[in-house]
Length: 398
Image (cartoon, rainbow, N blue to C red; front, side, top):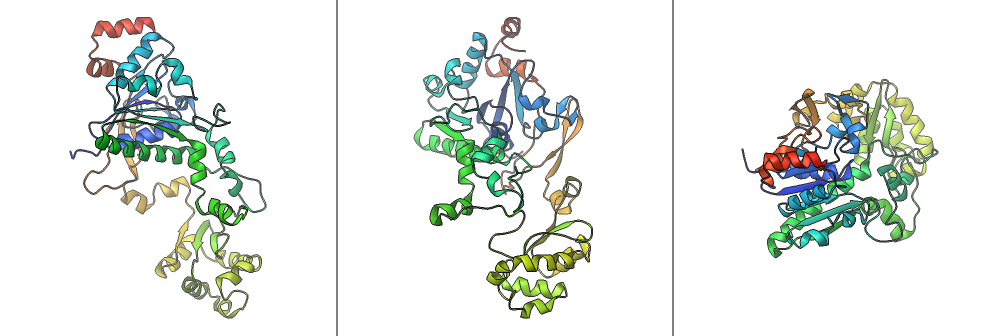
C-alpha cells in the first residue's frame, strides 16, 4: 500500500463529541496513528447519543471515529495521568477539547508536556478560546451557531432563526483544526519546534460568514434570512416540482434566457420587470409565484433532464435515501463498507479528498471502548502484562 501523507505521525486524541474527533478522523484518514483516550465505563459522550444504535454503538459515534485506537484511561487517577504523559512523550500531536484550565489541573497542559517533548504540536479546541470574557463558558454547536451569527442568517425570511441540520460549526472547526495541525507539522519540519494551537468554535464560525460578514464590515449592511433564496440573484433557490423539491441557480442572463425557453415562458424575456437580474430581484415577489406555478407542472426528474441538457445548474433536494443511492456519490466512493466486530458490515461516508498519489484510506473501524488498551500499553509504552494488570487493579485503565 502507498505510504500515506501522515504515516509515521502519532496523534494523542483527548477530545470527544464532534469537533475534535472530526479533526482527528481527518488526520487518521491520511495515515496518522490516532490514539483515542476515553473515560473508563462511559467513553466519548457520543457513544450514548442515540438512537439509532448498531452493535451497541451509536450512529453518531460511528460517523467520526474511524481509523483510531481506543484506550480507556481515568485521568482522575495519578497513574492514569502518568500514562497519558508517557504517551504524549511519544506523540507528534495532542488534541484536546476540555474547558480552559482543566488540562493544567491534570498537569497535561502544553507548558508541562513541552518540557519532555518540545516537538509536540498541541491543539486545544474550545467554545470561545483560551482568553477573553467568554473563556470559561461551556458551549455546544447549536449555541455557537447562534453566537457566531450563523443562526441569524438561517431560516425562512418570515420565520425564526434556525440551526443548520448538521452540527456544521463543529464540523467546520474540526476541518480548520486538521489543517492547522498539518501546517504546524510542516513548520516543525522547518524549525524543529512544536507549538500550541488555540482553536475555538466561535472564531471558526465568525470566519466562515464570508461575504455575509464582509457585507456588514465593509458597508454596515445587516444580514437577513433568505431561506433557500439568494439576496442578489433571482431565480436562485428551491422550487417545488410535481413530486419533490428541486434547486435551480439561474445566475446570469444567458441562463435566464435558457430557463424561460425551457419552461415555455419566453414572454418573460420581453417583460420589462424581468429583463435583467436587478429588475428580477426588485420584482421577486411577483416573479417567484409565477415560477412556482410552472415548476409544479413537471416532476423533478423531468425538469432535471431539461435543465441538465441546457447546462442550467440544478439538482434534486435529496433525502438520505436518494443521496446515498445517487450514482455520482457512489461513483466517487462516498459510501464505503468497513468490517466491525459487533456490527458486521458497517457503512460509512467515504474519504472526501481524492489525492492522486496518496489516497486516504479507512483502515480501522471506529473502536470499541478501550479496545486497544493492552495493545497501546504493551507496544507503545512497553508495559509488561503485570504492569497492565496493576493499572487495572488501580482503576487507572479498563
